[in-house]
Length: 623
Image 1: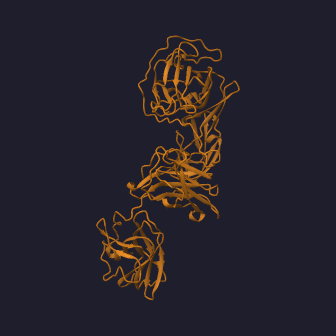
Image 2: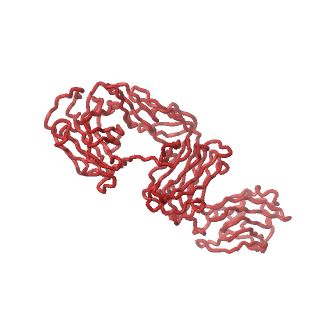
Image 3: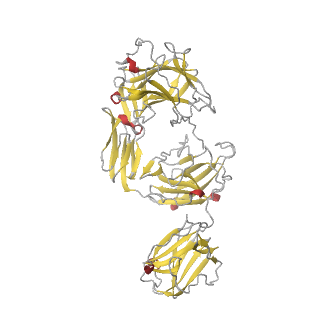
């Protein structure tokens, strides 16, 4: 499949450089022919030949710090313009140019309806982002104009203000971010940056969720941020201009606050079961789009992983430190329909939700992952729809090879397919897949992708706890210490209790199993190596009819089948299937009623059968 190419600008603000200017404008200007200056021209000006009073400049992290200069040779009007030199791809001095122009004292921009400027480039290009409201702090009233077309001649640009009444104290006067065009750097200039009252900006059309009426199931404790916030204006010359708008410009409404509330920052918190519809207004205008939430009540999270972090390489899990991940949905064009990514947060747990699934990829190539010492891949998946025969999810791992580049000629991949029988609608299912099962994955030293492929047969899933791990061959910690009072216990094998006298832990029943009692962290443990079947002959018949449960702690890295039996005189025996392999010590409480028709007043033996190497401890009856 083809990967979609995007030009990303990372705006993690990590550095405020010392390019600070505080220059007083030395001349006044007449109004331009096509606009009327705002009421307060001194506070309206950002850059006209020089920085306006109080203005400071701060660069974004990882930018070319020498990329911004004042140019007295090239200008639209007056004596100077702002010049921005975009670096080439791979420039060690910086990946892009970008920064903010801040007035630390703040300005009242409520009398204006637009930020305007003139710009041109040394070549035709598309500037990634321009706007205002970025103040190196909360960016509460951030406005962004994206993918701005740039010509080789001077052209005027208008960024409308969504609701000027909000901007009574704004510090972020102007900001920008631009990277190389097709890998190559270039130069662009911006001049005559100022706020204006144009009076020709009309017909605002705000949206949430890009104007779509969205419907989703949810759970109590989930929180998510409203997306797709924009506003489109008519500029008076017939052109429409759309800008991305920060949530604080909006007023959000929940039709049923007992189900979900919305903060000023657009964060939805689901607080109860039921249905609510989230809508919004920007000023006096109703926003297009809505979000209908059907809260299903209390959410059951995926089981918390318990593996030793030293044996784990985590891609997505709150239980471990994750490696750097570029994305959890690459939105691969042109065939992918899958929506969603790591945007679900329930009671502090991050969860990936995919809808409209046909295929989707998670990528972690910067750097790639060396999993040669790992043995398994784990993932928890919850299907959220009814399934029929033929439905499936194929899990695919991709290795980018030594050049660490997708499609570089040395890629390999392998996949494992699971049919509908492997999943349960509305329940978490954990998969522990030996890496050797990913046929075709000839290398694991440069892993970079995980794909889920359903071909549209299964559309809606939740995903959690994606990680690679090394399965040790034996437990390194002892089984949990029992806490049931000894008076309520009949013990077969445990260091915590007095065991049934005369019990034979290795009777000769013709089995191939090798039985030993190794010490694990100082605790005596029963080991069955190469299990086919194995019995325990109790020292005397036991009446356990007054007990309620059989407790067993067990650990196995390689078993694919394991059963335990109670046996009474006759013999009468009944099995109980145990889930294998385990992800550490597994403690199980088996109701004794599950062993019917075994005579619980005359239990004489226990038996295990299956395969692999099994470690057992704390085998006892209790009530």
